[in-house]
Image (cartoon, rainbow, N blue to C red; front, top):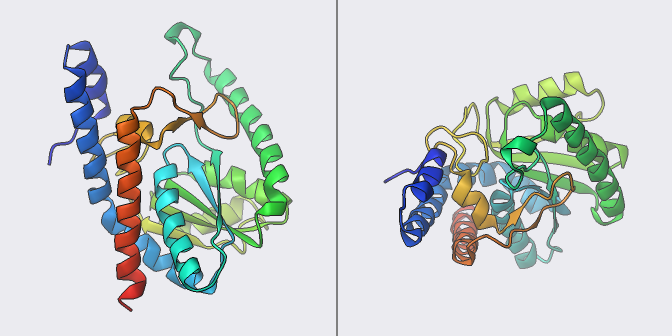
Length: 276
């Protein structure tokens, strides 16, 4: 199975590789990524299965951009179970977490580290307003879904906001560099009374950087965020708290990703629920 690292995409475009060949490689990357992460998705769903059966979560809060595809898979699985058991499907809301998107900014105009930190703080303020506006619609308990937890910075930010609004929440991530219990202990120690009632669910603990859905980290697929983030059909909007439509995204890639989301959700659902 061929892997194409992030450094390849720029080189391909500069070296005269035909656009249709680059597109074919991106399509292959998407196929591979879903196949390679199937076991981690299944393990994550196994962990949250009791919560699904209990109707524990009223809203899925997805972390854009790289967390959107995982959030769509998990959201579809929960929604299907709820529909088949007479429970209202959870709402799905997305927020722009993590780093600021500077892909459209010329190199000479890139901000300094200090300015970048100011931009992150500005987004945090906008995100807080966004969550406040949404708070009445979030229900009793939110499930934050992301693709990879390293130090827990994004989880910490969104957790603080939800806590201030009196909203209970849990965290589900495909990967984490730490064990779920260790992550909870660290966050409880750093942020008293915020994560006390929070459960953490991890598809693969101690995962390092094996993150095919990520933008900046990857081990065994080495930062394939280029085609996979394009396949979401969205991109971050500066310091805005929500992503915007990526008009440059190849719609065939977006369609393929949505197809793989449906297939992944259906396969895992049948194995996790209908066979028991």
